[in-house]
Image (cartoon, rainbow, N blue to C red; front, side, top):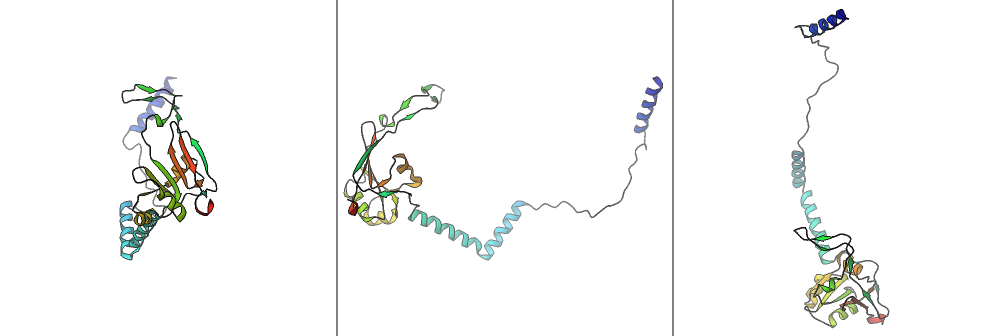
Amino acid sequence: MVSVRLTALAFCLSLLAPGAMMAKDFGTHGPVWEIAEPNLLEVINARLSAMEDSGELDDMRDEMQDTTRAYVNRPRPVPGLLPAEEAHSYEVDLSITLDRDLMDHRGVVFARAGTRINPLEYSHFNQRIVVFDGDVPDQVAFALSEGNELDTLLVLTNGAPLDLMRAHGRRFYFDQDARITSRFHITRLPSVITRGERVMMVEEVPVGGTQ
């Protein structure tokens, strides 16, 4: 056993001895290149410079401006809306039920999960909202027939708000992403939204040839 340990020790010492491990050149076995990775910012700048020299960058800029201008002048219409064919009204309850506790900045809970909250109890909003198609003259005339800037909001689901503003000297809004029509379940136009005591009232009003 002792001789085995001595033999192992001698082997280890021989590995540590100078010249025990020698490097050997095995030659070259194929072409070798330096690692060359282009700088991403330099590539981007070079591409932009080339696009600018060719005029492609100006064309892209003009196209983006034209697209933005066209969207502002005529936003994407809200789909699936039909003209009102008969007078109809319904209620919309805006109440929500909390799914978690609400806390202030100090961590004090002021509303528990499960609490039902009606925003009309805390809001003084009392404006009339007329939702209509700005490309239908009868609906535009109806929207402008009552109210003013202070008590009535004019909301388009289709049409050119800037053209209507210039033509009638009134402010027109657009129901982008169908937020208003979805929230108030509007499917017929024009519709008039007014405030009730605890609910909002929606009235579908047939106009023109749909009466």
